[in-house]
Length: 288
Image (cartoon, rainbow, N blue to C red):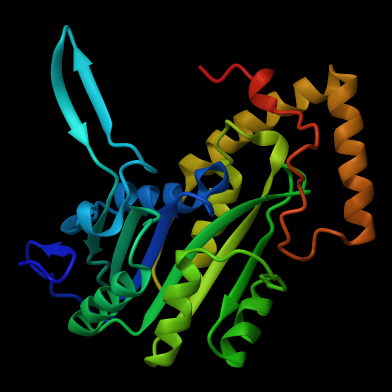
Protein backbone atom coordinates (compact mmCIF):
# COMPACT_ATOMS: atom_id res chain seq x y z
CA UNK A 1 0.00 0.00 0.00
CA UNK A 2 1.38 3.41 -0.98
CA UNK A 3 0.24 6.49 0.92
CA UNK A 4 1.58 9.53 -1.00
CA UNK A 5 5.27 8.93 -0.36
CA UNK A 6 5.10 6.25 2.34
CA UNK A 7 5.05 2.57 1.36
CA UNK A 8 3.07 0.57 3.93
CA UNK A 9 3.34 -3.21 3.96
CA UNK A 10 0.66 -3.74 6.59
CA UNK A 11 -0.46 -1.52 9.46
CA UNK A 12 0.14 -3.16 12.86
CA UNK A 13 -2.54 -3.55 15.52
CA UNK A 14 -1.34 -1.61 18.55
CA UNK A 15 -2.55 -0.62 22.02
CA UNK A 16 -2.28 3.04 23.09
CA UNK A 17 0.76 3.64 20.85
CA UNK A 18 3.05 6.65 20.66
CA UNK A 19 5.45 7.69 17.91
CA UNK A 20 9.19 8.19 18.49
CA UNK A 21 11.13 9.70 15.58
CA UNK A 22 14.89 9.97 15.22
CA UNK A 23 16.59 11.56 12.21
CA UNK A 24 20.10 11.72 10.80
CA UNK A 25 21.37 15.04 9.51
CA UNK A 26 21.61 18.55 10.96
CA UNK A 27 20.12 17.67 14.36
CA UNK A 28 21.99 14.41 14.97
CA UNK A 29 25.16 15.30 16.86
CA UNK A 30 27.06 12.18 18.01
CA UNK A 31 24.31 10.17 16.27
CA UNK A 32 22.13 10.51 19.37
CA UNK A 33 18.86 11.10 17.48
CA UNK A 34 18.99 8.41 14.81
CA UNK A 35 21.12 6.23 17.09
CA UNK A 36 18.45 6.26 19.80
CA UNK A 37 15.82 5.19 17.28
CA UNK A 38 18.09 2.41 16.08
CA UNK A 39 18.78 1.27 19.63
CA UNK A 40 15.06 1.08 20.42
CA UNK A 41 14.48 -0.96 17.27
CA UNK A 42 17.19 -3.46 18.19
CA UNK A 43 16.60 -3.59 21.92
CA UNK A 44 12.83 -3.97 21.67
CA UNK A 45 12.87 -6.21 18.58
CA UNK A 46 10.67 -3.84 16.62
CA UNK A 47 8.99 -5.06 13.44
CA UNK A 48 9.36 -3.17 10.19
CA UNK A 49 6.09 -2.16 8.49
CA UNK A 50 6.61 0.90 6.25
CA UNK A 51 9.20 2.96 4.36
CA UNK A 52 9.59 6.52 3.16
CA UNK A 53 9.76 6.87 -0.62
CA UNK A 54 13.28 8.09 -1.40
CA UNK A 55 12.34 9.76 -4.69
CA UNK A 56 9.66 11.82 -2.95
CA UNK A 57 11.58 13.20 0.01
CA UNK A 58 15.29 13.20 -0.84
CA UNK A 59 17.77 14.88 -3.17
CA UNK A 60 20.38 12.37 -4.26
CA UNK A 61 22.86 15.10 -5.17
CA UNK A 62 22.74 16.24 -1.53
CA UNK A 63 22.49 12.87 0.22
CA UNK A 64 24.31 10.50 -2.09
CA UNK A 65 23.12 6.89 -2.26
CA UNK A 66 25.54 4.43 -0.66
CA UNK A 67 26.97 1.81 -2.99
CA UNK A 68 29.15 -1.26 -2.54
CA UNK A 69 31.30 -2.45 -5.43
CA UNK A 70 33.40 -5.58 -5.00
CA UNK A 71 35.71 -6.92 -7.68
CA UNK A 72 34.16 -4.69 -10.31
CA UNK A 73 30.61 -5.84 -9.51
CA UNK A 74 27.92 -3.63 -7.95
CA UNK A 75 26.75 -5.51 -4.87
CA UNK A 76 24.38 -3.00 -3.32
CA UNK A 77 22.75 0.38 -3.86
CA UNK A 78 21.07 2.11 -0.93
CA UNK A 79 19.47 5.53 -1.36
CA UNK A 80 18.71 7.77 1.63
CA UNK A 81 15.40 7.07 3.29
CA UNK A 82 13.65 6.00 6.43
CA UNK A 83 11.54 3.21 7.86
CA UNK A 84 8.76 2.69 10.39
CA UNK A 85 8.84 -0.05 13.03
CA UNK A 86 6.28 -1.23 15.57
CA UNK A 87 6.69 -2.63 19.08
CA UNK A 88 4.01 -4.38 21.11
CA UNK A 89 5.10 -3.82 24.72
CA UNK A 90 2.18 -5.51 26.52
CA UNK A 91 1.42 -5.49 30.26
CA UNK A 92 -0.50 -2.23 30.20
CA UNK A 93 2.35 -0.23 28.68
CA UNK A 94 2.17 1.93 25.60
CA UNK A 95 3.06 0.28 22.31
CA UNK A 96 5.56 2.06 20.11
CA UNK A 97 5.95 3.19 16.54
CA UNK A 98 9.55 4.15 15.75
CA UNK A 99 10.59 6.19 12.73
CA UNK A 100 14.30 5.99 11.91
CA UNK A 101 15.21 8.16 8.93
CA UNK A 102 17.63 10.46 7.20
CA UNK A 103 16.33 14.00 7.49
CA UNK A 104 14.36 14.64 4.27
CA UNK A 105 15.55 17.31 1.85
CA UNK A 106 12.17 17.88 0.21
CA UNK A 107 8.43 18.19 0.91
CA UNK A 108 8.52 18.46 4.69
CA UNK A 109 4.85 19.44 4.89
CA UNK A 110 3.84 16.51 2.71
CA UNK A 111 5.81 14.17 4.94
CA UNK A 112 4.11 15.65 8.00
CA UNK A 113 0.68 15.17 6.41
CA UNK A 114 1.37 11.50 5.72
CA UNK A 115 2.93 10.98 9.11
CA UNK A 116 -0.17 12.29 10.84
CA UNK A 117 -2.36 10.19 8.59
CA UNK A 118 -0.55 7.06 9.77
CA UNK A 119 -0.76 8.26 13.37
CA UNK A 120 -4.53 8.68 13.10
CA UNK A 121 -4.95 5.23 11.59
CA UNK A 122 -2.91 3.67 14.40
CA UNK A 123 -4.51 5.67 17.19
CA UNK A 124 -1.37 7.63 18.05
CA UNK A 125 -1.94 10.86 19.98
CA UNK A 126 1.61 11.58 21.26
CA UNK A 127 4.66 12.23 19.08
CA UNK A 128 8.20 12.48 20.45
CA UNK A 129 10.95 13.67 18.10
CA UNK A 130 14.61 13.32 19.07
CA UNK A 131 17.48 15.65 18.29
CA UNK A 132 20.99 16.46 19.45
CA UNK A 133 23.35 19.41 19.05
CA UNK A 134 26.98 20.09 19.91
CA UNK A 135 27.34 22.47 22.83
CA UNK A 136 29.83 23.70 25.42
CA UNK A 137 29.15 20.88 27.86
CA UNK A 138 31.27 18.24 29.57
CA UNK A 139 31.20 14.56 28.69
CA UNK A 140 30.14 13.86 32.29
CA UNK A 141 27.01 15.98 31.84
CA UNK A 142 23.73 14.45 30.81
CA UNK A 143 21.76 17.49 29.73
CA UNK A 144 18.55 17.26 27.71
CA UNK A 145 16.36 20.20 26.67
CA UNK A 146 12.84 20.00 25.39
CA UNK A 147 9.89 21.74 23.80
CA UNK A 148 6.28 20.64 24.18
CA UNK A 149 2.92 21.60 22.72
CA UNK A 150 1.25 22.47 26.05
CA UNK A 151 2.27 24.29 29.21
CA UNK A 152 1.29 21.26 31.29
CA UNK A 153 3.67 19.08 29.32
CA UNK A 154 6.46 21.66 29.64
CA UNK A 155 5.94 21.51 33.41
CA UNK A 156 6.15 17.73 33.26
CA UNK A 157 9.39 17.93 31.32
CA UNK A 158 10.83 20.25 33.94
CA UNK A 159 10.01 17.79 36.73
CA UNK A 160 12.18 15.29 34.82
CA UNK A 161 15.07 17.83 34.80
CA UNK A 162 14.55 18.63 31.14
CA UNK A 163 15.37 22.27 30.43
CA UNK A 164 12.72 24.21 28.46
CA UNK A 165 14.32 25.29 25.20
CA UNK A 166 15.09 28.93 24.48
CA UNK A 167 16.35 29.09 20.90
CA UNK A 168 16.15 31.20 17.76
CA UNK A 169 17.75 29.98 14.56
CA UNK A 170 17.52 27.37 11.81
CA UNK A 171 14.89 24.69 12.24
CA UNK A 172 14.81 21.01 11.39
CA UNK A 173 12.17 18.48 10.33
CA UNK A 174 11.30 18.20 14.03
CA UNK A 175 9.91 21.76 13.94
CA UNK A 176 7.49 21.03 11.09
CA UNK A 177 6.24 17.89 12.81
CA UNK A 178 5.80 19.75 16.09
CA UNK A 179 4.13 22.80 14.55
CA UNK A 180 1.73 20.95 12.26
CA UNK A 181 1.01 18.24 14.82
CA UNK A 182 0.03 20.76 17.48
CA UNK A 183 -2.44 22.34 15.06
CA UNK A 184 -4.09 18.94 14.58
CA UNK A 185 -4.44 18.13 18.25
CA UNK A 186 -1.43 15.84 18.70
CA UNK A 187 0.62 16.09 21.87
CA UNK A 188 4.08 16.90 20.54
CA UNK A 189 7.37 16.73 22.39
CA UNK A 190 10.86 17.36 21.02
CA UNK A 191 13.83 16.29 23.13
CA UNK A 192 17.34 17.58 22.40
CA UNK A 193 20.51 16.18 23.93
CA UNK A 194 23.47 18.52 24.54
CA UNK A 195 26.63 16.86 23.23
CA UNK A 196 30.24 17.79 24.11
CA UNK A 197 31.84 18.96 20.89
CA UNK A 198 35.19 17.36 21.79
CA UNK A 199 33.65 13.88 21.62
CA UNK A 200 33.03 14.04 17.87
CA UNK A 201 33.63 10.66 16.31
CA UNK A 202 32.60 8.70 19.40
CA UNK A 203 29.34 7.33 20.76
CA UNK A 204 28.14 8.90 24.01
CA UNK A 205 26.54 5.80 25.51
CA UNK A 206 25.75 7.70 28.71
CA UNK A 207 23.63 10.28 26.89
CA UNK A 208 21.87 7.53 24.95
CA UNK A 209 21.04 5.73 28.19
CA UNK A 210 19.81 8.92 29.84
CA UNK A 211 17.67 9.87 26.85
CA UNK A 212 16.24 6.35 26.71
CA UNK A 213 15.19 6.61 30.34
CA UNK A 214 13.45 9.92 29.71
CA UNK A 215 11.58 8.58 26.70
CA UNK A 216 10.45 5.50 28.62
CA UNK A 217 9.20 7.62 31.49
CA UNK A 218 7.31 10.04 29.26
CA UNK A 219 6.01 7.27 27.01
CA UNK A 220 4.93 4.80 29.71
CA UNK A 221 6.99 1.81 28.66
CA UNK A 222 9.91 -0.09 30.15
CA UNK A 223 13.42 0.22 28.75
CA UNK A 224 16.50 -1.23 30.44
CA UNK A 225 19.88 -0.01 29.19
CA UNK A 226 22.60 -1.88 31.15
CA UNK A 227 24.59 -2.40 27.95
CA UNK A 228 24.75 1.34 27.31
CA UNK A 229 25.80 2.07 30.88
CA UNK A 230 28.51 -0.60 30.76
CA UNK A 231 29.88 0.76 27.48
CA UNK A 232 29.81 4.30 28.84
CA UNK A 233 31.72 3.28 31.98
CA UNK A 234 34.51 1.83 29.84
CA UNK A 235 34.66 4.84 27.52
CA UNK A 236 34.52 7.33 30.39
CA UNK A 237 37.50 5.64 32.04
CA UNK A 238 39.42 5.83 28.78
CA UNK A 239 38.56 9.52 28.38
CA UNK A 240 39.73 10.22 31.95
CA UNK A 241 43.09 8.59 31.30
CA UNK A 242 43.51 10.67 28.16
CA UNK A 243 42.64 13.90 29.94
CA UNK A 244 44.95 13.12 32.86
CA UNK A 245 47.84 12.64 30.44
CA UNK A 246 47.23 15.58 28.12
CA UNK A 247 47.62 19.22 29.21
CA UNK A 248 45.68 20.55 26.23
CA UNK A 249 42.66 18.43 27.09
CA UNK A 250 42.99 19.41 30.75
CA UNK A 251 42.87 23.08 29.75
CA UNK A 252 39.79 22.49 27.62
CA UNK A 253 37.92 20.67 30.39
CA UNK A 254 38.90 23.32 32.94
CA UNK A 255 37.57 26.06 30.68
CA UNK A 256 34.27 24.24 30.16
CA UNK A 257 33.89 23.71 33.91
CA UNK A 258 34.28 27.45 34.47
CA UNK A 259 31.62 28.16 31.84
CA UNK A 260 29.33 25.64 33.50
CA UNK A 261 29.66 27.44 36.84
CA UNK A 262 28.56 30.62 35.08
CA UNK A 263 25.42 28.82 33.92
CA UNK A 264 26.14 29.26 30.23
CA UNK A 265 25.00 25.74 29.25
CA UNK A 266 21.39 26.04 30.36
CA UNK A 267 20.05 26.89 26.91
CA UNK A 268 20.33 24.99 23.64
CA UNK A 269 22.24 27.43 21.52
CA UNK A 270 24.97 25.71 19.52
CA UNK A 271 27.75 28.09 20.50
CA UNK A 272 30.63 26.48 18.58
CA UNK A 273 31.89 28.77 15.82
CA UNK A 274 33.02 27.46 12.46
CA UNK A 275 36.52 28.92 12.87
CA UNK A 276 36.96 27.82 16.49
CA UNK A 277 39.70 25.28 17.18
CA UNK A 278 38.08 22.02 18.22
CA UNK A 279 39.94 19.35 20.14
CA UNK A 280 38.45 16.11 18.89
CA UNK A 281 38.93 13.11 21.17
CA UNK A 282 38.67 10.70 18.27
CA UNK A 283 42.24 11.83 17.47
CA UNK A 284 43.32 10.38 20.82
CA UNK A 285 40.94 7.48 21.47
CA UNK A 286 41.53 3.90 20.44
CA UNK A 287 38.04 3.15 19.17
CA UNK A 288 38.75 -0.37 17.96
